[in-house]
Image (tube, rainbow, N blue to C red; front, side, top):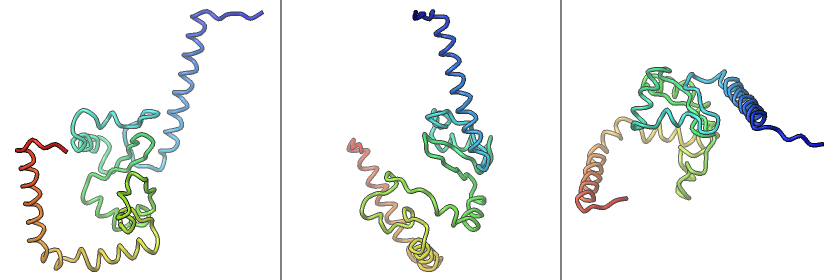
Length: 174
């Protein structure tokens, strides 16, 4: 004969299964974070998104960096993110570990469209990326060229500010 379980027995079974799943998730995330920088403990599916809510994201990241240091790991959903909140640390990392950082996964949402095929940001690490990086460092980011284009940059900033101001006065929303 089939015995029907009482509500008390069903709740006990459900609670024990939920506890096992929770412990497995904690063990799984702790084990994978061994070689990563410190950061807040992520929730199983949503990650660390609740730590960024409430205040503007840059304020939340500043508060988290005071607790976890200038390099920290955040899990935003299923995407693992390493946040660097110090300019000195960022400079050192980009000088010494640029090849490791260049070998990242490029998600479709990061690609803008057909114009982003040749972008340094969305290119995978390899000969093409190294050629783009060499061009940037030898041609584009040279102090002499940056100083020569300062008037154009300031004009573009003023145009953008005027555009935003006019849009706000006309009640335009984007």
